[in-house]
Image (cartoon, rainbow, N blue to C red; front, side):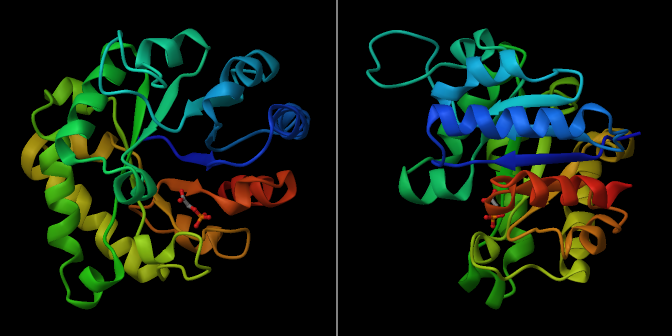
Length: 252
Ligand code: PGA
């Protein structure tokens, strides 16, 4: 059966020293805990190697927040999937709405990034989600379907089976507004149906679909109790161990 996952996305927060302290604190808190979900932290690139070496990899997986759409070479400032892998990270967040909106990431670029991530044995946490106008126009189903089709549906069923999806309505990210549990379940079920139609029910049932967007200690339990919500991608609330741990505990 599919995994439950609580993944933190630190975004562009924390110096290396602050990030190391946060990771060490989380590692300590999770040491004796019995967990009912996988825990992942998505750190800035420069933190990856130090954080990966400092945490218990059996308890905490480490994710990059992006990787390049090229394998290697003259691409100043870029970080390749193989470099991410070499730090000890096991995951890479791809297609976050902030990358799509502020850095012009397209469906085609993301398709390449996913392929390179898989080639380098990283687990992509692939983000999809509609903006407010699309939700208000009732287009959210078609928007997320298109995002999935455009970047992921040329993968083989075997490769698709290695993907984690994160549904993040853009209007809920960092805004304090959350999709209701019913809204989350409705679209997660739709996403799973979309996967089943393409890859079959077995692959769809095995795919973890996370919810993201102002998920916090107060709403995590209700969101995660939905049959098609398999955890969360957590921004703001992943920056404090107590808040993040409370979300992890929503699975207990
Ligand atoms: P948020 O961010 O939890 O701060 O809303 C979620 C995300 O963007 O992954």
